[in-house]
Length: 317
Image (cartoon, rainbow, N blue to C red):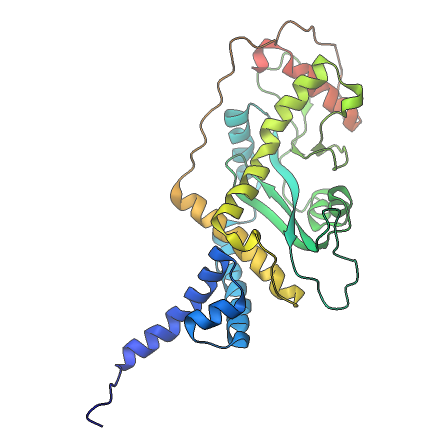
C-alpha cells in the first residue's frame, strides 16, 4: 500500500458536493450535450441527466422567494414608478411576452410542439419589470398556440381577474389636468388581447400620428421583457440550442432555473438602466388632443385612447 494515494475524506466530500453544481452550471452556460458533459466529469449520461433535473428544481425552489417574490400593492407601485421614471410610461406594472424555447421532439407528441419556425419548442410566458427582472414566469405551453391564446389559458390571467395579485387601485396619471383615475395595466404586443388591465399597440392598418406616438411610448416599456429574454439567452447558452430532454418536467425545471438565475445575476451586477430624457425636438404639443371622459365602465379601447391623448400633452413628457 506504499504506492497508493489516499485522498482526505474532506476532499472527497467537497468534490461530491461541488461536482453536481459544476455539472449544472456548465450545462446551463454552454448548452452542451449530456454526453459531452459526462465525458468531461467522468460520469454516466444518466447520472448527468439526473443531476441536472434534481439541481435545477432545487435552484428554483431555493431562490424563487428571494429573487422572484410575490408582489404586494406597495411593490407594484414601486414597479410602476420605475416604468414612469425610466420609460415615461405611467401606471404600468409590467411587460408581458412569450419566448420560444427550442427542444427536441418529445415522445408521442406528434406536431403538438411544432411551431411556425419549423422546429419543436415550448413557450415561456413571462412578465418583467422596468429593469429587465422577471416578476412572473409560466412555462410548458405547447408552441402551436399564439401568445394571446397562451395568455388566455395562463395562470396569470386567472390571478389578475381573480384579484389574487394584490394589484393597486386606479390612480390619477402624473400631471394630468383631469381628475380621472386611470387603472394600472400591463403591456404586450399585437398578439395579446386588449383588456382593461392589458394594453396593446394600435394595428398599423389604422395608423395616424397620434397612434404612432402611443405605439412608440408603449414599445419603450414593452421592450424590457424582450431585453430580459436577450440578456438571459446570452448568459445561458442552453437557450440557444435545443434542450435535449424527453421529460417535460425536467425541461420546465431547466427553464425556470435559468429565469431565476437571470434575476440573481442581474441584481448582483446592478441595474444599469437610467432615467429617460425626452428629445427637445419632440412633436408633443403640435397635435391637439381630444377630450375623452373616463368612468368605471369605460371600455379598454377608451382607456387606450385616453392614454394616447395624455401622451400628446406637454406635461406628459
